[in-house]
Amino acid sequence: MGTIGLDSTPRLRRGVRLTYDKTRETHVLLFPEGVLVPNGTAAAVLKLCDGVATVAEITAELGRDYEGVRVEDVRNVLTRLEERRVVQWT
Image (cartoon, rainbow, N blue to C red; front, side, top):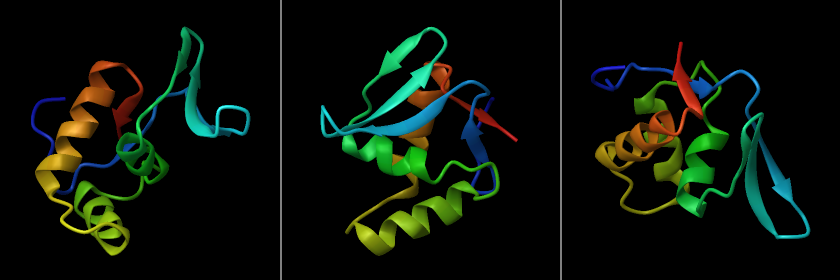
């Protein structure tokens, strides 16, 4: 994807699943090629990537729980996740 707009809608790629690992006490991304342990910020964003919520809505939702959330921060996280082939756009 080129530019991530406020109306872009990310979702997890097919075969990628975000789950909580009780043993490690952290979220993990499971996909056919392996396992990725996202940091807390990435996990918070990933939980909202349902293919319906826009980047603007995700930013607003995160802003309710965390102080100082900026749309650029969300875009940067999503760009990195797209590069890792974890997120795609609907």
